[in-house]
Length: 266
Image 1 (cartoon, rainbow, N blue to C red):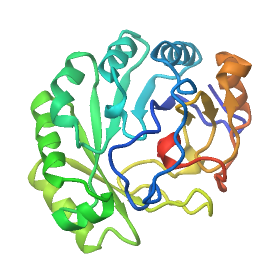
Image 2: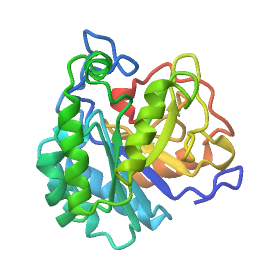
Image 3: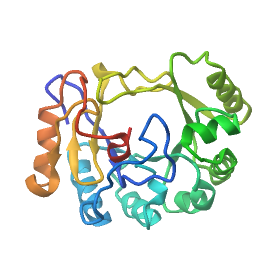
């Protein structure tokens, strides 16, 4: 699919849940957020239908996100359903890694190609503070499990405040080099103010070459993370929502006043 700025859209990021087992300071308030009703969240069959239609229109890259996708009951079954679509060349997932040691082998077995894991610091106490209670050892166990399962390349998403030269970011880089992982530095974003930057070591945040659409957990196709535009697949129909998002994809991100990272997938 080509948008009005001649960008080829071939990438769909799918938020399968707005739930998460962490409460990262830059993602949600300490008290949490108002969660979607379970009846509002897309079923796996609905997600599969969206992917099938998207592939027919030219999407060949799928990323499963959240919230935290591994807290969605039956997530392995969804991976198996999607991996059966031979038009998908790249099926990946972003996770905080807390539950990954339990799922890495079966995710690979059912067709997941690769994985991104969030890790902002190697200091256990700082990690606990940032995530409001997370155990960094579980993330390390998840990383090892992903390596052993062959979910390669394994990319580490490291959120930075100002620079990759920050002490925590440098420690994460050293950890990645030692463990043969790839690191991506993501500047801390703010949907409401429109603060974002190009991902260092990746291509996110580069509006000029943006190739992605997003599907929220409750069935909205969004053409841009930093924009209020969204098109409801249940109201419009899947193909119609995908085409509307493509035709109205903005040239550049601005701000998003209606979504939260937990329900849109970063």
